[in-house]
Length: 55
Ligand code: SF4
Ligand code: SF4
Image (cartoon, rainbow, N blue to C red; front, side, top):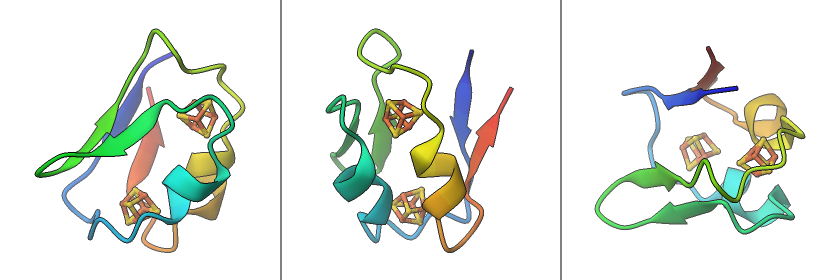
């Protein structure tokens, strides 16, 4: 599975708070760590901007 962070992301941090695998971080933008992700899709489902896309 691949997750794409789209330009709609406003770095609100909501997805980070639900990720139990510590796979999302904000540096100057939201970063997804594929090697940590357990593919639960909580981030995708909770994002208020629909900014995470499964590919
Ligand atoms: S919840 Fe959505 S808008 Fe907020 S940081 Fe995550 S991807 Fe970006
Ligand atoms: S799919 Fe689940 S484990 Fe992967 S980044 Fe999103 S919330 Fe974290």
